[in-house]
Image 1: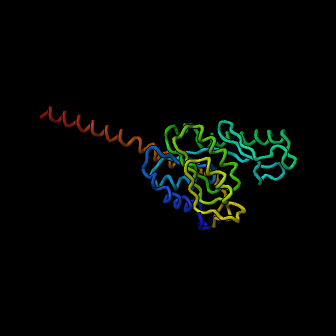
Image 2: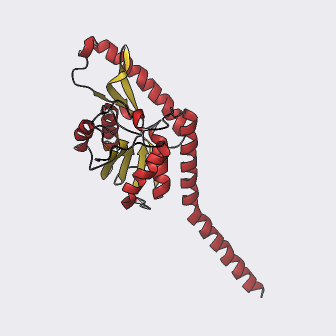
Image 3: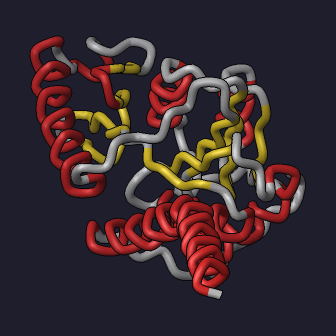
Length: 246
């Protein structure tokens, strides 16, 4: 974590993380949990390189009223909420304002859950290794909410994997997970985007396309043994039938 490197884009960052996570390659008990939206291209690249399953974990930043770019906390699936120390009260933010922002972001979280997942059920995490992925971490409040949501789903181990984050945030998160993988930890950190050459906003459509690709491959892989078995059964039946005719 001493190399303060830049990344071409999220796809390249995911491939580089996959190299660091290669011990999980091909493991049926490992699953990538990507944070939409920006974490999905990163998580997709990891899952594809390692040949493991991909799912999403939804969390939303709670922006400071009047200064929405600053996170005063985050919410996640199941109503988990994490607030920065001093909130409410910080910069004059009232409890009513915190509740209003929370309600708005929970509504958006539910909308995205429907849009991204559709009728697909979340993957079961009990007893599995969950690899939590985003395109980077700044303050860590959103990631902390994600960690708490993921922990509640019962994985046997929780890995946090991100391309870039400031050292102080990594230090705060390290004790919350079983393993932490970060490719670059620059001390002079303004935003995640400053460490990417291309950091366009990931669209809902891109998230949907990547998830559909990953889930289609997963379904095909699960059906393959059944199809092979059916083929063998059909061939055996034909052989028996031919033999009977003979």
